[in-house]
Amino acid sequence: MGAKIEGGMNIAMKVPSHQYEATIAFYRDVVGLEGIPEKLPAVGFKLGPNQLWIDEAPTMSQAEVWLELFTPDFAGTLKQLGDAGVVRCDPIEPLGETFRGGWIMNPANIVHMVREPDAW
Image 1 (tube, one colour):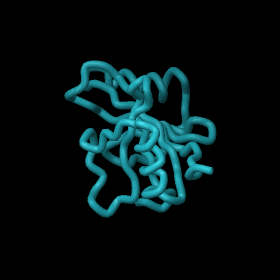
Image 2 (cartoon, one colour):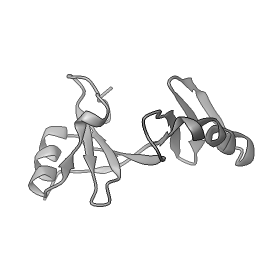
Image 3 (cartoon, helix red, strand yellow):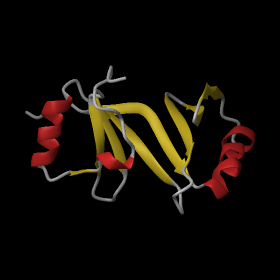
Image 4 (cartoon, helix red, strand yellow):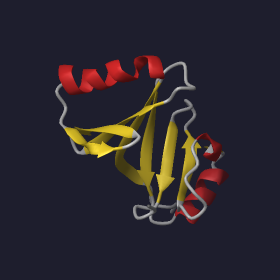
């Protein structure tokens, strides 16, 4: 049996600067999602049981969606993922030396943060 991995509640949308304000307005004014008190630099919205965080990404040319996965044992999960050939991509956004988690990509190049629930 492998390490336990389950879906997290955070979804990050990395949006280029030229689309950032319109994207926030879409979720706030058109869709009408309830905002989450500002937690700079991201703007947050309640998305059912999840939280959608919209980050301005000036160096990107198109938007990306990043997902979160939880595991009670990041080190063990990291080994299992590595054994399965999963690509690590930690340099994309530094999390700090003591953070118990990291970044991976699925085969379709969707970024996932894999972390222990109390990693912050």
